[in-house]
Image 1 (cartoon, rainbow, N blue to C red):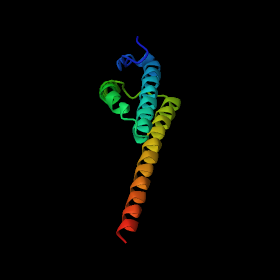
Image 2 (cartoon, helix red, strand yellow; image 1 turned 30 degrees about the vertical axis):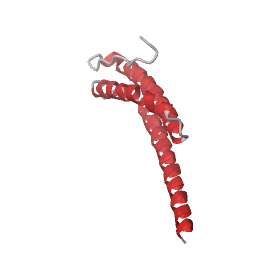
Image 3 (cartoon, helix red, strand yellow; image 1 turned 90 degrees about the vertical axis):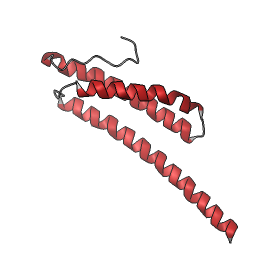
Length: 116
């Protein structure tokens, strides 16, 4: 299996379900890290990040398909890891949105000062 390829999940294999989820969570974490990296690059004005975005969206679609077929046999530890990865993604997106809104507020303040 390639390092960045989506793991093949077979939900019918109950005994290996936990191991399959470990593979899927590894993939999800790798995807999340890449997404955060591209988000930070684009927020810093690096437009080269946009050229990587379509491939990342393709991986998101692959992940979604695998997730739908993964079954629900996560261990508590795996569920905690899944939530931890989601939280990391949400927090990063929130920080980026906050900095965007902060920049917008500064721009509006400057515009107000110029019109006075």
